[in-house]
Amino acid sequence: MPEETTSRPHIVTCTAPVNIAVVKYWGKRDEDLILPISSSLSVTLHQDQLKTTTTVAISTSFKVDRMWLNGKEEDITHPRLQSCLREIRRLARKRRKDGEPDSTESTGLSHKVHICSVNNFPTAAGLASSAAGFACLVYSLAQAFGVEGDLSGIARQGSGSACRSMYGGFVQWIMGNRDDGKDSIAQQVEPESHWPELRILVLVASAKRKPIGSTSGMQTSVQTSVLLKHRAESVVPHRMDKMIKAVQKRDFAAFAEITMKDSNQFHATCLDTYPPIFYLNSVSQQIIHLVHRYNGHYRESRVAYSFDAGPNAVIFTLQQHVPEFVRVVQHFFPPDTNGEEYAKSRNLFVSLLFQIFFPHETN
Image 1: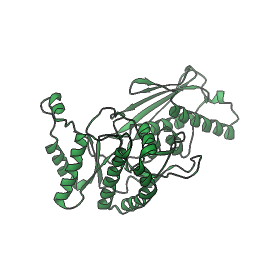
Image 2: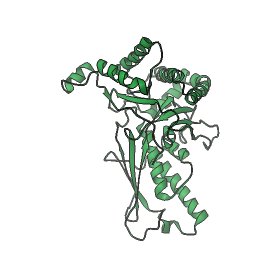
Image 3: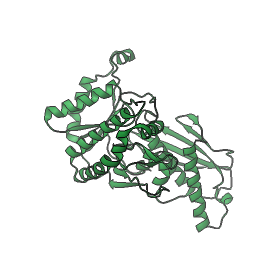
Image 4: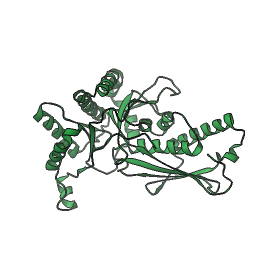
């Protein structure tokens, strides 16, 4: 970052993608460092449809750090935000100390930051908004302060899944075993160009904020769910191996089966939590039934569903099946032709986004 001799701010703008886990992350062994109880694997979505855009400004005229999300000022003192800010500033100071004799004052490292972040999709509705948000925040701060190298470990401290949004294509989050979390990082399994026929549809069953956030939901599950412990120890390790092989071989049948089974088990874990957590709604359930009926008709897995901590469905399919399945969805969930009340009365507010390809990395 260049020296600032005036109050004119140094500004950096970056974007980051949403990722959808096909082997889910749920549960932490360390709440402060955000270390998971099991590994996970995700697919990064194309930024043409779903992304977070973050602008970071640094200036001598700023008196305090501030942040805005979708036009509304947020609490900058939130522990996870502070963790990311502290770590980026620490690495920037270390880099300056190792490479340059200048003081932090002369390089702007002690100046305050203003952060403006915007999502072009529903926030806190189960579309991994925090993952894209913290990935974008960390990348933007790193660009502004001149920090280089792998940033997934820092993004993880903001939101666990954010470490996976640091890369395009297929990404695994390795759980790691160290107490300090240094080995809990994201790693690209295959690039976005690996499986060009794969397509992703997002069916928005509800844009409302979910009643129970992922953080509190995970804590309750870890404390009360016997199924979660079994899942982490006995199911996920084998499932990760099978999923990585399915991706590498571009075996859609295996990919689809593992994806749907893992989504089902994740939500079974939520039901096994006490008190139980309900993220799916009636529309979600209808989508699940529709997918199985569609696959049953052809006697093969042509589409697969996955639901994160929310009611919105992510549909995986191949290019040749997109037109027909879109028509099927539109037949069973017709567009709202009679106004908002029609959608409310039918409880079928489903909007279809365009097919989503794989993105380039965060930029």
